Length: 132
Image 1 (cartoon, one colour):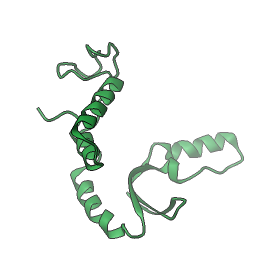
Image 2 (cartoon, helix red, strand yellow; image 1 turned 135 degrees about the vertical axis):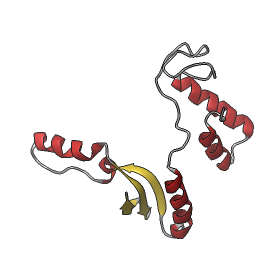
Image 3 (cartoon, helix red, strand yellow; image 1 turned 90 degrees about the vertical axis):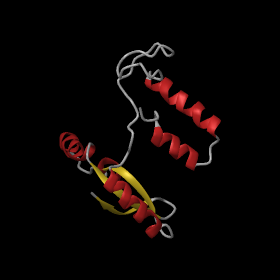
């Protein structure tokens, strides 16, 4: 069986956290999700937590192709931009219409959609470009 929370472990280690601190944070996340025991099925209560949540951390945030592109993209723009992944369109665009009903319709059209990568520049994190 693959190591639980492998991607999260890699990220926390890359941030410079000690192995002990990484394990503490993994245990905390498992507690939040109601899991932690290998024999606990998704959606069933953890023996430790006594709660049930139907969530488990994804093994990978990006597809293999997206990961390859990200690894090339980040160094290419590192001098002038920061790259974010899987940004919701609702976070990039605001809905502007005086009619409340039309505002909800327009907002719902973009709310659950996302771009795969988005580049931001400047102190105020202004969007520069996005790709899907």
